[in-house]
Length: 329
Image 1 (tube, one colour):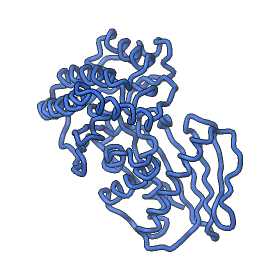
Image 2: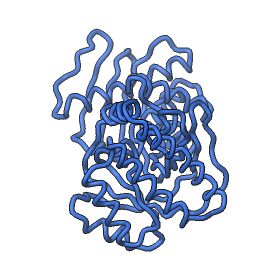
Image 3: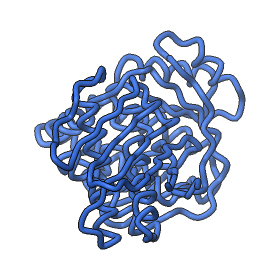
Image 4: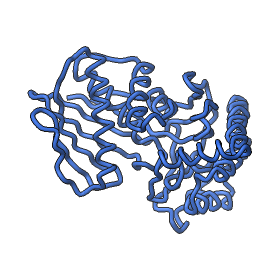
């Protein structure tokens, strides 16, 4: 039996624009997904999922039947979850040179599902790592990140970027632009505060909406390019340790994302609550449409304000996690 964990993430800058070759800077946070893998004697796959902001479920398939039983969970969520686990196991078998094997897989997570905090990437990264180790092999963080990206790319119909999986595998603050992925050096203390509205956005639909706007309106394409310029300015602020400038750029980034149609009333409400509490900056994080916002605030004011903001179901501090994927046991 092997257990691995991997961190979730927030986007400091760059979501959506990263799909079009612009840079993005995600940061790993100290909220983790843990995947436990134990090899079976047969070739079936049994997956038990807990704490994914939905009712827990257990699904078994493979071997003589691929039938998935009815469970009290929305079908798309089950299909996505099993798709990620299927892909992670397939990558582990390939990496270990095993033609086939069965596993009992247990998934536990502190990361809200579909909230823009990289829950699926963390599950896939931890799943590949645990399954590969259970088969007696071990991958570098870079190969692990690449294999996890291939899983997300397949499950998300080619709409994934390398940002989430690379950040989850490596930890810390990273820069992703197309195929160029690297961990940034020393960065200042980033006093993240996260607000969560309890909702999930449809990533595919939101990405498609931005694509349509970009193809229809020149100014929408300009907005995407402006996000790329903003990320580059943010990298300079990170190097200088200028957290106040990072906050200002986060505010600007949220405005551009809102103009591209990926914000939501609940996200805007939380962003403004953070700003009115004197946060250094605040923006949505992830695909949008619902989910989470991230703010920078050294004080407790933003956290307190979000706790009393209508529509915010959870608020928490999220320290930068400098460690990526790791073995728990």
